[in-house]
Image (cartoon, rainbow, N blue to C red; front, top):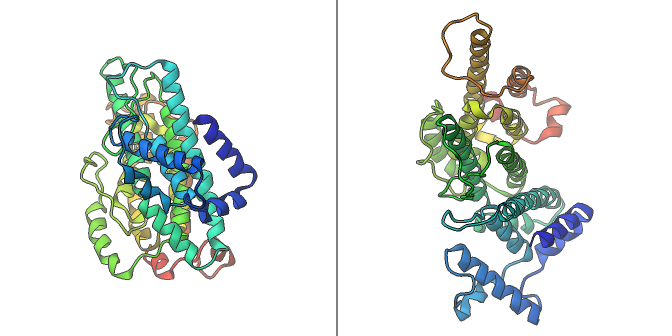
Length: 377
């Protein structure tokens, strides 16, 4: 499987346009062959195994019918999402080689999705009128936005879990729980490097998905009021509040999801993962042109949290230098040397974007954003 995915990744890098056009316009049922029948059977078995059944158990005769109308791009995205959330159950004894192999499959799946979304965003611009609607429907059918947001939230939970257990002096067992919509992740290691690498890749694929979603998705005007109510509750987000109550809202873009904003604030609040803060800040600054009606809310919440982090770093510096006797509640375990500069640059970029004159040529090159949202911000 890893070899097959590596081949797909190589094709996406060498000839992305032709490959994406081919898999987007070719149906699985394009021609009946023995290989096609085997492929549909494997897809059906893979689906029942994901649902918790034995891979080699009996499958219904009509189980293959659900795949006949699917395009190859839908199959590829679904498989990547499955492997991205793959894990070994806690009761299964596995070797370190198995854990490394599963982690490599997770990373490979995310990289393929990232390359695929980046190329789809380019293809959509020069495609016919119906193609963006097809891509939008496919993303919704595969629950791409929901899955990636849940995985990102799980990665945030796992960082906090790892730090809490380390502070409590517990030994992390050599068991990888994987991550999914209902579980946390534990990378079975005494360092956070692999977890940070996975979260970094998730942030990249999320950023490219936001761009793709902006080009293919049309948000009905009547849905705006519904999200305004949700955002009002999240306007003054407490980073310590539980995130279990947050749910994915269908027919709303990623940037308009309460899960997205809460994940950003919670991640920026984590003092045990300061080295990931620059990438979270980069996600926000890169997504500013695609915020739309929630630009004002996101900017206020994120800027407030960045200012808090800046103040916390100052308090920590004063305590470590002996200028203050009171130990701050927020203490970064590992602070990058340029952390202060990163925070200042992030705040500057956000504020400058909101002050940017929409009549300038530079602004027009970014993206066509409603001036009403800019004035509100």
